[in-house]
Length: 215
Image (cartoon, rainbow, N blue to C red; front, side, top):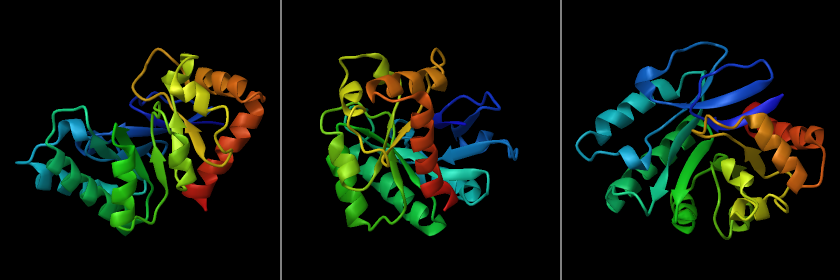
């Protein structure tokens, strides 16, 4: 089984387990699908934050929702920083309350995210998705998971360097919103970088998946 830990596509496949990032209002509760729900920092609105978070909360406890997010902090987007922080704090609290993993979007803010997780005593598994920056090892060194995606297709990317020495018990793979690449292709290139077979890569990620979603 291939595990796609973050995607925006709801295309189903018998050989791929996908965690689909979805808007709470559009989720279709089908037993064969698995969702993450949260408020992306790009789309926050101070006037509707409470209402939007209430919608997240309403569906987040459902069994077909496996994780909270994607959520986090983004230094590049236009959303007011204080609003991002407020929303992120709410997601941390919800993740702790429901005991579900937190799926993180972080752009030029990874150290701030780590600080906020410590500040608000986050206790659940954390997955930083789509990592592709210098210092990725600081995230798994802090006990969190990192997820690699399409950046692996660029051999000069920070992601392609980090995948070569990431701890076997600290990573996932994803396609995110890229419809031009399959999770099987991501696994193949990851295995090549790690000098191992695709089967070994599958085994490592399967174990990581079970450690936070099944245990």
